[in-house]
Amino acid sequence: MTAAVASPAAPPLLVRGVGKQFGATHALRDVTFEVRRGEVHALLGHNGCGKSTLVKIISGFQAADSGSITMGGLDGAGARVGIVHQDLGLCRSATVVENCGMGSFQRRLGMINWKQERRVVAEILTSLGADFGLDDIVADLSPADKAITAIARALKASGGVEGLDLLVLDEATAALRGPDAEKVLSAARAVAAHGGGVLLVTHHMSEVLADADRATVLASGRVVDTVDVAGVTEDDLLRLIGGGKVPPKVGPSGRQASIGDEVLTVRSLTGAAVHDLDFAVRPGEIVGLTGAAGAGHDEVPYLLCGVTKRSVGSIGVAGEPYTGRSVREAQQSGLGVLPADRLRQGIVPRASVRENLSPASRASHRTGGVLRVQREKAWARDICADYAVMPPDPELPMSALSGGNQQKVLFARVLEHDPRVLVLHEPTQGVDENTRRALLRRVRDLVDEGLGVLYVSSDAEEVAECADRVLVMRRGALVGELPAGLDHIDEIYAACYAAGDRNAAAPTREENDR
Ligand SMILES: Nc1ncnc2c1ncn2[C@@H]1O[C@H](COP(=O)(O)OP(=O)(O)OP(=O)(O)O)[C@@H](O)[C@H]1O
Image (cartoon, rainbow, N blue to C red):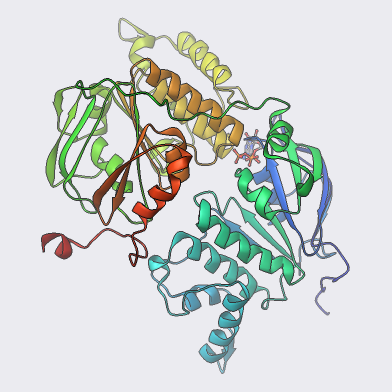
């Protein structure tokens, strides 16, 4: 029997009448659209509109209840499809060529034919415009180069540059902005230029406007429209996604925070990746903390809430000493933390949305030590409605919510417990643009009432957009404080990436000691 072969005349992806239901939730209803050869096609929509469900059906991880999907004219078996998810799935300690070969090594007499492997991977990397080497260790690559390695692996698995019918980038650029995202998307364009199709799942409208040819917008599981990107603006897309409503952007307040009464005071803070950090947050301001990958800013939230032990330094919360030894102490002191790693540190997937919302609030739902479940249920229903959590049923397990809706629950949990100071760590990951603006509006309103916020993110643009002042880290140290606002983004990038300091990574302990 000969294996089925994709037809160059058939579209890389044809989705016809696809439906999928989970219990009472219609994740997809009669979804129909196609990705053409040579195009980058964006798949857009609000959180919970069904994008991930569709990607899972394309990848064969889930089955559709109705309808059909063909790729290059084939219904799954034999289709040449590469899917790059947000977590990339790379082996960090292996080299680029080793990663690209995993699952598709060419063998001769039972041995991996490294000469052939190197030739094929080098050709693929050249076609993608990559400027890193076959023998580079993946852990040492920039985030953009890691994503390009994952694309190269998908091409390699389907037989080379010309081999892939469909490349799906499933929020693979979620953690990238600016030049990093551009680099990955230009690699994706190269795949389209070789005759494949690219399905780009993203919440970043700038990427769609710069790199997509057409876009299909889903809302509540249905296709709202498929549009030519050349004929639309960002607001047009956001209106389609949000059903007509586009919340305004939230920018820096432009006013001076009250001086003196610091809500967070950090002195000589030193951990594994940072050293001698001194900074303060005052009531009524959002302080941004950013840096390039590996600069050390990522460790700061963990040091502040006690997940990572600090070796030196002191922390004060609202003028009181704070040991930072445990998450419980952070909560009791009024230090609210929204963690970056939603799955490992943020949520309990099997617990209900209500239980995920409640840990710190249970005291207020007790009378004489007894939990008043009905009171807590009513409270959780109100919160779900207020934060537009979909589906708005607090008794569902957290795992039944889409990623962006889980993030709304985390926001609600931390904002609804009256923190005195808030540490937000990559807080808008995975949320759609309209929701992002609505959540940042809430934060800004609380800041206007006197909350102090430390906003930690590798996304320098987002930090510049919503903070009042920006602290930049490089190689484990604070290297500057800059004014906020997108007008200052070039200065902020320049501080993040000093000349000749490619990844601005934190120094080793030996370098620290020198
Ligand atoms: N395994 C599941 N069990 C129950 N409901 C589910 C399951 N998977 C998805 N859903 C529901 O299906 C709908 C679509 O979810 P999906 O994850 O596809 O959305 P999405 O568009 O990818 O959202 P996001 O942008 O937040 O990632 C949501 O209402 C979600 O709650």
